[in-house]
Length: 111
Image (tube, rainbow, N blue to C red; front, side, top):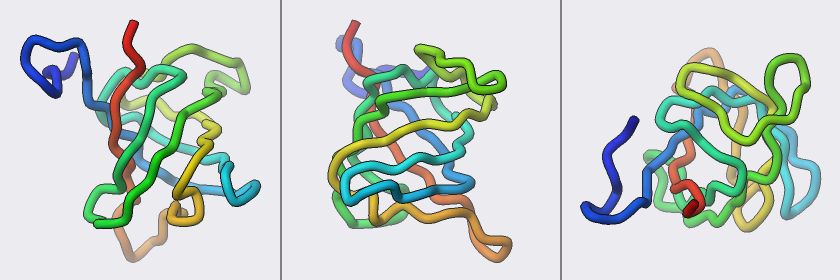
């Protein structure tokens, strides 16, 4: 489990690495991702791209794992197809052989 973002709160930082992304519309994308900090729950909000000053505001609305089965959360080191909606989807990029995977960071919804 990760450390709380703010001591004394239940806000937990999460991070997904993006392998492949498909921009569906100006406000929606689907992406094959790997969870590197989590678990990441459906409803998580992502507010930044690692190593970028660009602002994003994306909500994770769906997680398809284990051969297309819808799940509520994704544990570290597991991969899934996710749907992200909100501001900044056009900034998401697929991995390239010559560069690091892009990673998005945010927080899980409160329980």
